[in-house]
Image (cartoon, rainbow, N blue to C red; front, top):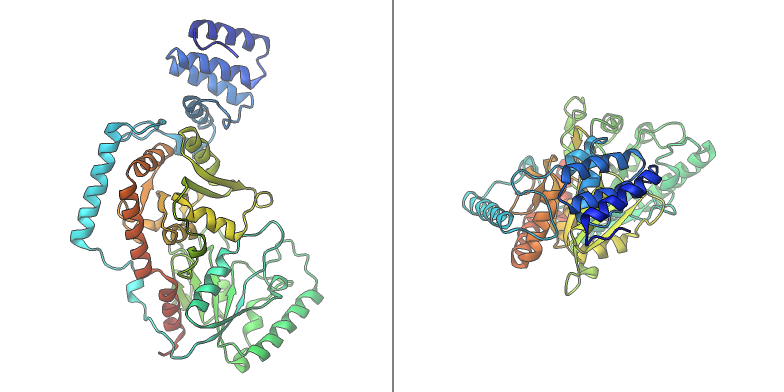
Length: 462
C-alpha cells in the first residue's frame, strides 16, 4: 500500500504497480486513490472507469470518495446506477456528515410542507373515499388459498397480512394446507394426480368448513397443472364468494386480472397504474387497495424500547439495493442491511419484522423497470413499525401519503443520505413524522378499512 503522507510519491508508486500488472483492478483503484488525494478528481474518475473495464465491481473501496467515484464509473455502463448516483443539484453531493446549507434547505422543505398540510388538510386518498364500507353483523368463515413457504422462501408477509388482519376482526380464518399443489407451477412439473388430489382436498375442506368467503392468491396464469378459473364455475352449491388477490398487476406482467375476473366475485389489485383493469370487460369486479392489510399488532412483539439502527434495508439483490447499501455504509450510517438472492440469507418473517421495528428509517424502492414503479408492501410495514420511510420517487405513493409530511421522497442516493443524516440529527422531527404517518395509515389503510371495503364490494350487509 502506498504512503498517503506524500501524495506525489503515492501516485508514482501506484503507477509503477499499475505498469507491472495492468490487469489487476486493485492497482487501478490504488492509482485513483492517489490522484484523489492530490485533488485530481476528474483524473481519478477516468482511472476508475478503466478499473471498471477490468472487472472492478465498485462495492469494496476503502473510502467514501472512492465509493462515489467507483459507482459513478459503473454508471457509465448502467443507466440505473447512473440515475441513482447522480449528485443532487440542490442538496449537493453526499458526504459522511450533513453540511449546514443542506440542513437549512431540508428544514425549510419540512416546515413548508407541514404548514401546507395543516392548513389545507388534503382529502382521503382517491378512490378510497368512494367505496362502500361494510362491517358484517356476524363473523365470517374465511378459507384462504395462499402458498406455504418452501425452504429458502421464508417471508410470509402477504398471506400473514390478509389472514391475521381478518382474525384481528374476529373472523374465523383457515388456510387450505394443500395450496402449494394448486397454485403456481412455473416449471410445469406437477402431475395430474397431484393436482386432482389437491382439488379433492379443496372440495372436502369446503364441505367441512363451509366458508362464506374464499380468498385466493391469483398472481399467476393457470395451466393443466394448476387450479384454473373453470374450477370455480360450478361453486354455487357451496354458497361462498370468491375473492382473488393479485399483488403484481402492472403492464410488464401477464394480465392476471382478466384471467381470474371472469369467475371471481372480487379481484383485489394493489397497483392502480396499469391498463389491465381499465381495458377489462370485468373492471367492475376490481377493487384497488394499496398494500396488503396488516393486523394492528404486527410489529408489537418486536417493538424495542430504543431503536438501535439508522437504516433498514432488506430485500432481494435487485432494484439497485446493493448500491444503496454501499453508499449508506460508506457515509457511516448504521443499519440492518440484509440483501439476498432468494435462496441464501432469506430472513424469516419474524426476523424481518424485528429488524424493521428496530430501525429509525426504512429505505424502499419500487422500481420494476425503467417505466414502471410501484407502491410496495414495505411502505405500509415501515409506517406501522413507526419507522420513517425514505421512498424512491416515481411511484404513486404521493397519491396516498403526503411527501415531507408522512415520508421522505428521494431521487438519488445523495438525497437519501442527506435526508437520513438530517433525521438522525433531529430525532424529534423523525418521531413526529413517524407519528403522523401512523395516524394517517390507521385512518385510511389499516386492516379493518380494507376488509370493510372488500365486504362492501362483495355485497355483504352490516
